[in-house]
Amino acid sequence: MFRLYQGKIFNLAMSILKNESDAEEATQDVFMTVIRKVGTFQGNSAFYSWIYRICVNTCLMRLRGKRRSETVSIEEFMPVFTDEGMHASPMDDWSKEVERDALNAELGRMIRKFTEELSEKYRVVFVLSDVEGLSNEETAKVLGLTIPAIKSRLHRARLYLREQLSRYLREGKAE
Amino acid sequence: MNCKELAYMLADYCNGSMDPRLREELDEHLSRCEPCMAFTKTFRATCEGTRKLREAIEYAIPDEVRERLDLFVRSAALKYPEKVKEYRDQVERDRREKVADLAGAAAAGQLSSATALLMESHCAACPECNGYIDAFRKTGTPRGGDPPAGIRSHLIALMQALPPGEEFFLA
Image 1 (cartoon, one colour):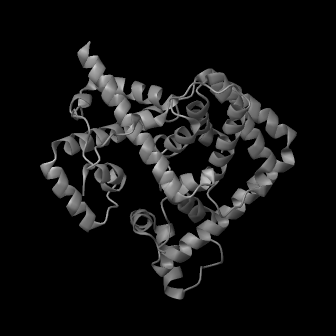
Image 2: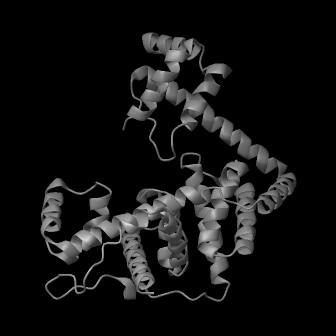
Image 3: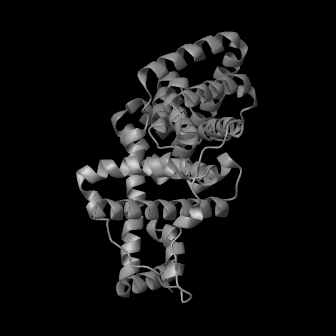
């Protein structure tokens, strides 16, 4: 069980805590909790969703005990529209550019960096859904939120990321 | 539909869960709006980039961290032997139940399409499981109660071959 989950739990903790030694300690806490509380595990719910929930709670508790790291305001990266609901600024299509191998690896690095700058509210949802690959229903269960709340946060996180990548690629081109 | 509405509907559009009528409307808007086409393509590329990232980082855990975590869990498990036993018993009970349900659903033709496919290809190569499920199907009751150890291990492997979240049975 432990071997099956340690990589996933460590990665999830890394995505939330953004620091290897914190993630390692959190992973230890998660497994300690799992060992102690396994008797309370409801066999009818998926084991991985139970263990993910313990991991998210453990990481959030740790975050709350620390000084908050700098995060960006997601509002600054939402698309801007005119009163008529049209795009207020021109759009570059960089989708073909990132298919090139060199940029592809760079894209992965930038996605990680920009994700780390998101506030915890959006980061946790984005990591569980898009990085860990959980369905909206599963993410909602892990975080104790409604599915519409998950969908909305996830969509905003993706819009933010798209805009960050656009700005990064635009600036890169200008250099 | 305008550009703003389109931007906020892209998630359903990209994952294919959008109502066909709305999809048609959105496609029609895309066909005549260059900024939205660029926006949609780059939105898709962003999601695709994250999906690739997921494949790349899965299970990426430094060796020394893995070793320390192994050691930690082994010593923690020693401190709570009764909990570990409780966990193993629980897993065993869950597995027994799941295997019995799986065999029952296979006999009743109630498997989800993915599981039915796996079961079919397994049974084609395994006379033991094929005989057991076939007899179950004909008689409506499992031969000798729970499946024997050999069949049980095959059915467990079959369940583990399905990705997480995949349903075993038809709703």
